[in-house]
Image (cartoon, rainbow, N blue to C red; front, side):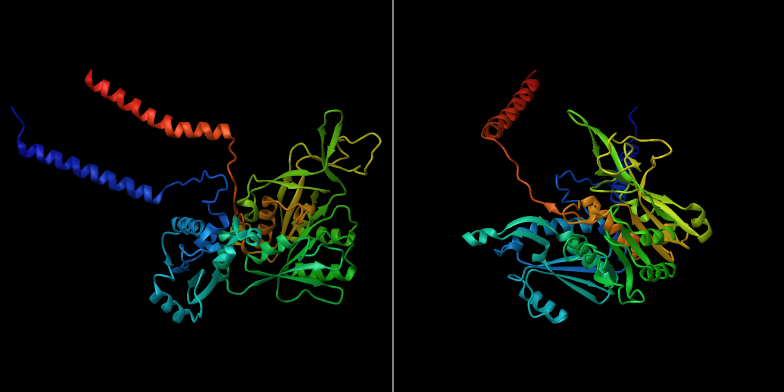
Length: 487
């Protein structure tokens, strides 16, 4: 007996509805929970952690208007594709409350006139407009690229070396979130490197965080400036005097924020005493390890260290390796003082397992160096730490009356030695000092240019593969399917 047609129709209808429901649920879950990976060599399609954190802080609608013509011959046309890719990634990471508009000034004159009237601009060309809660930021798109201009001398076109759009855009977004700029002072007067010269890359990265970099000499000042959000002291060759130490110490006890990069080769007892008052004690040692050379055993003084995950300033850098060239000393902690003064001390950077703190570190040791238990400083060997006075236990809250960050090395901050990971750490430290712990992650990466070098033999093989190999494979598959059907 055949089943009734009505029952079959109902069964098929229910199956179709079930399939549609499952399809809708799968798409809904896929829309909410997904993973995107960037397999490009330069990671040009990946947003930095800092950029993603900044986008999350925009609670109200944000508008980005890009006024540029992709067909107009100019250096900007070389980065227009990278700019579109950057905007696509931003839209993927912030799906709500963000509107991106592209305006071609050669084709949409009426829209250009509307923008000129709204933002009171006389010229609109190769410009990005950021609009948030009535505040605007204008960015020159040409500044988002690093160009080699030497071909212009021979009538050629500029060559794009790197795309810096994410750095420039993130800095502007920070400015929209917090219009008032923070002031970061570099202490001078003790032989420190200049933020305009030897530390210019570090200082420029701070400026990109919507902060103003200034120099400060305490030789004639009795107090830290009232607008100082943070104080940075890098590799002083001579020590602070007692008055300067008292001024900085009083400022720290009253809510000051300071980053100290030590020069182990300098004798600075007042500075060391200042750090010890916050529970961080610089040790009289040098971090090193032995390496086996072809004909002898050598001493490696360039320290490889990894970032620890225990505070917000380094959580996003967890596991990252950083090279500290030159002399490096380890840091100890005065736990009784920290407990008495309600100071929370946390290690930030730890040397790799093979290193130790050698106390007999003078050069040309007759018997060489070797780790001696009870004399030298062994693992764990901390070379970077923070001390928060009267801080809350949960560092995600971001409340502390004062913060001191000390690193037992300074050469890694110089332009000649600065690496991307080292700059990430420095910027993360500064952001945490000026109360931007939520955006103290990795700085945006440059999408650098590279070329694929192929020999003539490799080019010939590639041509044969494209011209003969792929079509032959498709033909073979077709013949296989034809034969299969015939049998």
